[in-house]
Length: 197
Image (spheres, rainbow, N blue to C red):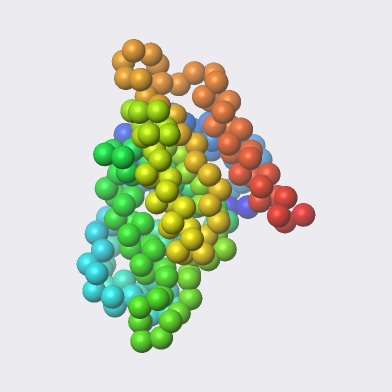
């Protein structure tokens, strides 16, 4: 089983990374191969809306020369795409938004001369997020966007794990959060295993 983890945080020692660490440890313990792509280290330009990708049915077909196609191929080559991001202005960070804009457009061939495939169809998608509000008010718009992304692209949505940052009033990580994110990794793994048995 292979996970493609797309990390949208600019901070390698931040709250999202603190949740992702035990999640990945649990994945390794379960025998999951996980590749992590730090999006702030990569070049992914915003979508140009040129629609050139729509007439390339066998791949993303984007005209831009950046890291998008390599990341998209990793998304295609996995069982589960894991999106890890802090929530800024009620949505994911800018590099992740740019990637998802291009992935859903180049990956869903609805607007070309002929209707084509959904290149990410059959993949599963899960999310890990942090925000400064209660998750039901801080990450709700992000989660709804993920559900729609999955419906449009033919992916299966597997849920979100989100925890609130209280700022300097208390440490972000604690034992409950570490165990809960490990449990989330197990739940994703068990859901897939249940379908495979």
